[in-house]
Image 1 (cartoon, protein in one colour):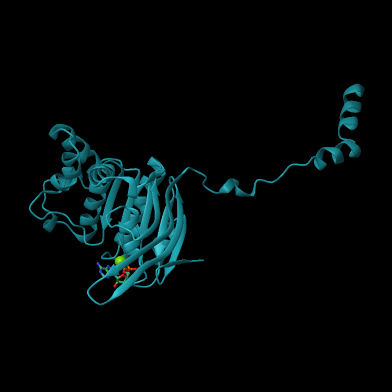
Image 2 (cartoon, rainbow, N blue to C red):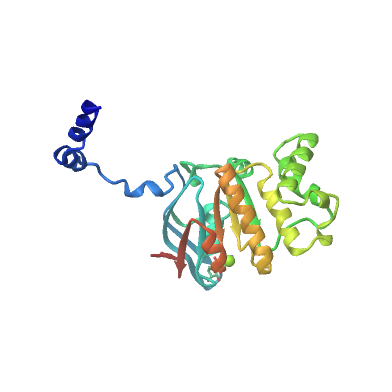
Length: 259
Ligand SMILES: Nc1ncnc2c1ncn2[C@@H]1O[C@H](COP(=O)(O)OP(=O)(O)O)[C@@H](O)[C@H]1O
Ligand SMILES: [Mg+2]
């Protein structure tokens, strides 16, 4: 008994304690931040639209860097270049100068064919206006990107049904888009954008046409998928609610990123 007591006393003697707490342990201030590999980089990106007698500098030297698994919102006033940035980053539109790298690959270095292939395999797109084909059923719309990239009809149907289930639309699979509500249509668009499990999902005003209840639903779905699959989401939005759900907001003004 007595020896044990003694031991305790000597261990917690103030001298020893002081030395122990003085050990130089550097605080890791950045440990809370997400630190995956960088998947999207733009450096000094300039995009100029030229028509007969007008030139519009839509992007005026944009530098951004987005890491894997991040959900980023791009915000700013109408006309500041958000859609242009999304189109350029995803390779849908060309740039005048600067550089864009996706997963370390320089977009400019890819041929049109290679770029289309890369896009089909690695990217999903969600737009404000749904872009569902009205003559195809919901499940046919969702399986389209799979069929385009060579998946067999049977597999495409199976995967599409699974994705429709994820977004809560399985029982609507045989309906035409015109028979769905706005919120349901946007969920079908999401299923289509995500059916081939793309590494990067681009969304331009995905909740722009939705009421607040549907906006919450869509954002719940997006954040769920983002966490579950570590996919990277880049979302252009006017909505402060959507901005608040993102990990980070990139603010733009007059073709530039503002701090
Ligand atoms: N295809 C185009 N031809 C000419 N000008 C364009 C074109 N697309 C966009 N712009 C111009 O580029 C600027 C940025 O537009 P945009 O990227 O659509 O802004 P945002 O999405 O932030 O509203 C605007 O001044 C717009 O008029
Ligand atoms: Mg826009």
